[in-house]
Image (cartoon, rainbow, N blue to C red; front, side, top):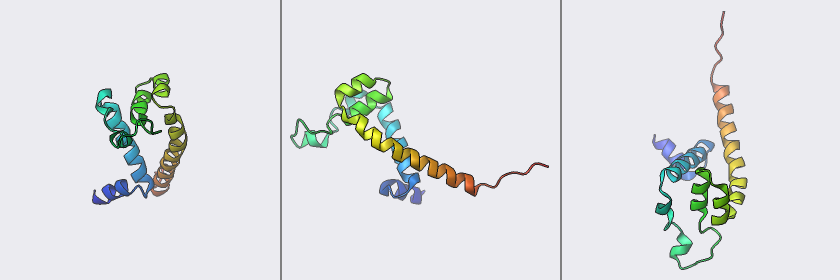
Length: 109
């Protein structure tokens, strides 16, 4: 358990990156939209027009099936997902391949 926590915190392994992505997606999906209003680090520092302001809310909108509203919240969400999802999918396939190679096939007589 400690090793898995270290993998997730460091993001150095495929398993850690997939775990963090899934957990973050579940937490964002389960949150209410207005809970995400004050998460922006740039907003707390006084910036009103930083590119990342609204990305979490845009992702929330995508997870809830509102792609047009996500576009209006922050268009950058599609670029972030365009880069991030292939990386996560690569990690998922890497984990699946590793799991398939370590499991022994059953022989039926």
